[in-house]
Structure formats: structure tokens, C-alpha cells
Length: 233
Image (cartoon, rainbow, N blue to C red; front, side, top):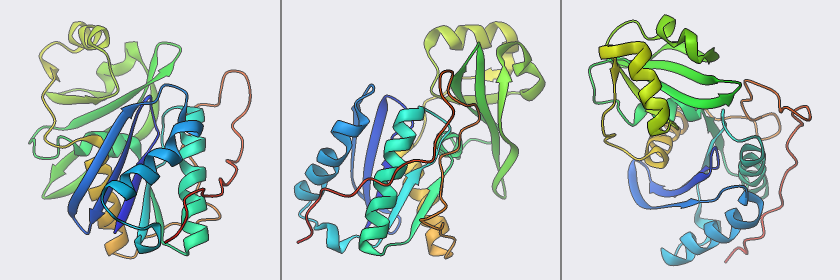
């Protein structure tokens, strides 16, 4: 049983999956309360599905970009569980998971997250016989979006209706806004399972959040491992 954790943004998510089959998901508006709400919600999801933490076989975690505090808490919790239970762990780009929500589309997919200072964390993907990264994660100012999106492209990720209007003004018909076929947490679970099934796991000691920009006040610090508070049964 795989546990997937996403604390990249205020909309946090958890997923339990047996291989590629999703057993249950839970998403909630967390705002900045990740440290308080994450572990109780993991415990509740396991209990709801009558699954003991000892029966977990792997941990998948969103590694960012996204909320500095959220990623720190999510990675710390995931690493704590993986270390204490001797489980394989894999970190997946939040932007890739956001793009994979639209993987059935024939168009390129540009996933975006607000990065402050009127700019966005962006990455570009497309299914070209296989899932392919066309442009790796980077910070792109709003005014330079048209340099990244040069043809009809699905725009996804953590963006508001107001931002969509800005993109429409800049990109015109090249900006496509469609309904995703998967939730982000389910996409994250699928991508992580693909990696783990190929034995492409991360080192629990060195796995770090993906910060494309340092915090405005303090520099990004190495996340502290959070000791799991979930009892094994």
C-alpha cells in the first residue's frame, strides 16, 4: 500500500493506492496549518480504510515547488515515516503532477504555481508516445510567459481566475483552460508509483524540497525530520 502526501499549497492532499489502483484520497484547505493538520489526517485516512501504518509499502511525496512551510512539513513527515518504517520513498515534482492531470490531451501542458514578484514557477510537458518534459522547472515573469507558450497549450496548476484572464490577454488562443481528468493527488500517486515500480527511489537522507526561489525573509533551510506520531498496529 502506497501513501502519497502533497503539501505544496493550501490545498493539501493524501492518497492511498495499491499499485496503480487508487483506494482513497483526501484533500483539504490547509492554509498554513500543515504542521498541525497533516499527521492527524494521515491517521484518519488510514483508520477509515482499516489500514495499519505497518502495512505501508512506500511513500510518495510532492517535493515542490510550492509553499515553503508546506513543503518543509510534507517532506519532513514523509521522510520520518520512510526512515522509521524502512520504506522506499520518492519525491515527485508538483509541477509535473499538475501537468499529468491533463496527460490525455494532445497539446503541450504548462503547469504553473505563483512564485511571487509577479512571476510563476513553470514547467512544460507533453505526451509524445511517452510522457516527456519539454521545459524543466524555472521561474518565469508574467510578461515572459509567451516565450514559453508558443502554440496552443493547456494551462494548469495553482492559478486563479484573475490570472487566467491575464494569460488570455497575453497568450490569446494559445492559452487553453480545460477540466483535468485526474486530481493532482492521484496524478502524484501515479507518477510516484511508476518510479517506484522501476526501483527509482530517492535517498531518504538527501531528498530535499524543490525551491526555485528562496524565502523573502530567511534562506531555505534543510527540513527537519518529523518523527511520526502514528502508532503502528
